[in-house]
Length: 173
Image (cartoon, rainbow, N blue to C red):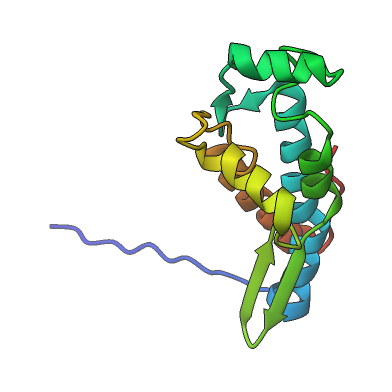
């Protein structure tokens, strides 16, 4: 029986490996991840929230249920559109969510992005909870304004890959 061997020779250019390791260290340290979260993830979440309000729901929240007759009458009496826009009478909730930015904590190998940057209080907190989970009295269905799904995860992972590969962030279109 004949035996043979195959030999592979791999040549590694140390300079390219060193450059790659330095890029990984720069992009995946606390400051690098904070830059990624600030430059790409925060703007992405803000844009998704703006778009969710504009379309009255999306792939995360589902299409928002129509307003009840009573709510339409109250809105019309107050000088707002009766049926639309949903979740936007005065604009306070949408403005709060899209104008408060995001908060980033990055230290000791741990990074966290909080969106919105400030937790609402008072009237905005009540509006946010009503939108997110609805209420029983008065009966108000949930029309979520915040959320993430697999589309957001895919974006974040693809953006992180690009960020690590190229060491830069690009703006959200």
